[in-house]
Length: 84
Image (cartoon, rainbow, N blue to C red; front, side):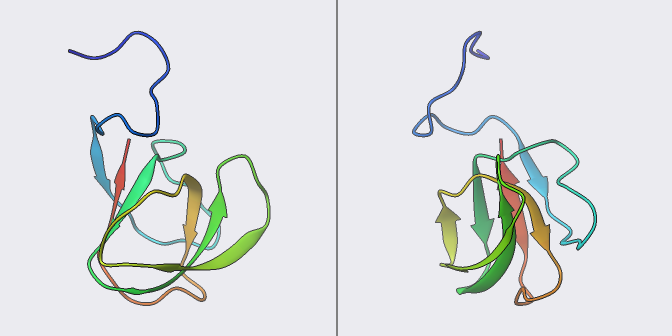
């Protein structure tokens, strides 16, 4: 069942989308709720509701960070899946 109201961060994700890092294009499905990364490393992201890019450390597995863009520049090579 798809909820009618806003989802809490602790609710399970309903959709998964592969992420292609881009320095110019936001995530095509809007701000994600979390990222699943295939390796521990660094991603450069723009957080949901922000405009500045920052480098963050991510762990292999689920990372509870809401972002609108994952940049190619400054990001380690890994497979990234966005949870919505």
